[in-house]
Length: 624
Image (cartoon, rainbow, N blue to C red; front, side):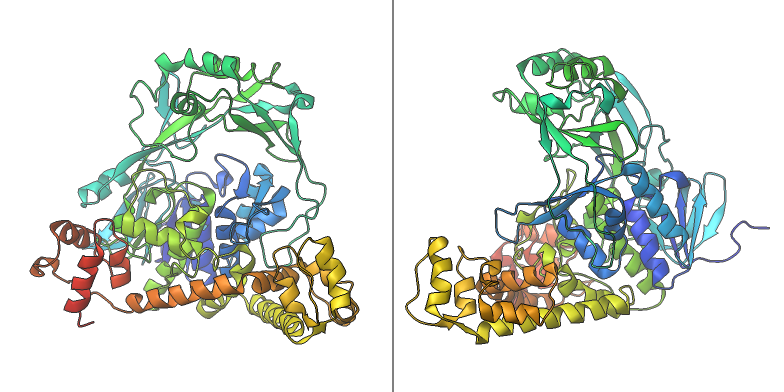
């Protein structure tokens, strides 16, 4: 008797952030789904820092939630601190970040999946995919079990031929204490896939009882903490603080004594590491003129002594790590729970994928997460959700689910990956998005919940909540547009704010549109006070109202630019298009276009090496 006698609609390989979101999405859409992972105890594991969100990453978590994913909900349920970053800047830069309880986060993710209909779990290592011609039809595991499926999503994280480095020691592993995965890379390369090696790292974990926090600077959470999910998740209370300290020249000199055995400097590590999250030894080597670097000391959870030494990622030997940490303020008596390490792993350049994250050469095979060269839980989870939706849609003959660059950071992420590729771990930043005023963290539900609802992932309750929010926002904005305020009522506020006074009555919206004036400044004026007494608006509505009033000009300008770009998105390029026939194209453009095989003129315009002149030639050739 076979362990799996039936054919699954979707098999997801790997239970990290990409795999968990992919499995949840496919199952919630109605696909009979199987999640195969090495260890069921580490589903949703935070392998590195115990936090979700951050600059641009927080926007991605809110987008996942708006579409109907689980990452925002799990984050809200298990956070121990919340901070809104960049509030001194414009709202396009505001980014939510939460410190998480690592143990609770993984536990809640597993429970979410265990209570998801249509989803089965199985602990084993997938070593091969099963093929029928150029179409995937299942997987084979280390136990020799063949499991049939109509589509497969690979979300292997750092486990494909993973190798851990600590000083001059190296051993196989996907992360500390867990075996690496083998077989898949070799098979995919034999099938013609291009592969590469990347590197990431993690810092030591230490015992909080051995630290002197009085010598560090406390970092409390926000006074009024927000959250990620648009659902009714619990409000955060009793936040835990993080702390900051600094390295110093003595720490740097101590670290340098281990450089001779450093796997990074001796060449034992071949993979390319993350540019924006370098190891501590890389920092003091590259920025040798700096005599200190900031270190964030973060709790791993409510019920544990374990602390995460953020900013001290390293692959140096454990004794050097210990000696160097002891020379930082507050770490004089530190006890190490686990040394930091670097890990190398296989990835597949994402230019081999379509926008749906399906591979170009094998039908119904999808890649998501670090296998595509990205870094970060949030980037992985966003890809996982998109891959899960598209695997389901492919099986059931539905339209592709693709998010545009003006619709979501997830859309920017995927378009960057498949159009430009990456040869170093890709991390999302707000600067990567040309329409970041549109892609704010406060309006992810307005942008994406209708899309999630249309495909069947976001619930009707979510859509009803959005409709109610939109109605409230419109009602308040309309009131401020139509209602006048007398000069004698508004001038004391304007004077206190250091801005020019008015000589006659004006609409409230004109006063609030001034950068010096906040929406809350007019709440005590009688007309506004009376309006608020008869209407109830939550903080999300008030935030949206103020942003719309102050930034409407910028928002409209970006919408106009996005509309212009969408015209090029509508100019499709046939999949079998022969660029070699167009003599006017540059040689580089022909090579790049043939390799990437863009589906639209707009995508072609974003390929490095394809010039505006090349795009003009293509438009003429397409009759435009």
